[in-house]
Length: 227
Image (cartoon, rainbow, N blue to C red):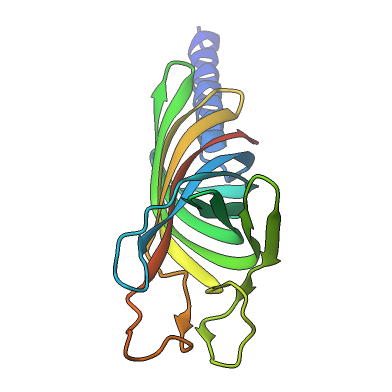
């Protein structure tokens, strides 16, 4: 008669132990690799304060992130991403293209909710970017002229006549997506730059005060795997 209660207690203890293990497993720190395509633009105003009318360019991004549980369903998700940005514009028969490459540190907060066999996810947060390279080109039907972009916060009168950009960028991220039970995920990303990426240019005659303000904006699609 005593065997049955003891057996029930053992089963309950074992069930509680397994449930706790599963709960703990879901709350573990996880890592992800991801990559995808960018649709980027440079928006803002030119030297005279007129609105820029640039066209988007297609770029790409690739990187990693770590997901840290902070509360039930909520996570902190910092990462390290290589990404390309820029814009293009057409002047008659000429097309100018401005391409920038950054290493970015996104600091996102993510909410996940069970949906089917996977999870719906919604995230947002700031990012900081560091410029590591870029090119500017002008082309027509027969000729292309290309030069490297230099990163500098202030351009002085004696500096070379080349295109410049600021070293640092910063702004906000927002994304939504779906993560399958096996760890594969797909997300749609949006990004809004909040810092000017064009440097202060002291080559401009003071009479014609510089009213330019150029910022990175864009969206993209990422696919990744979390493990």
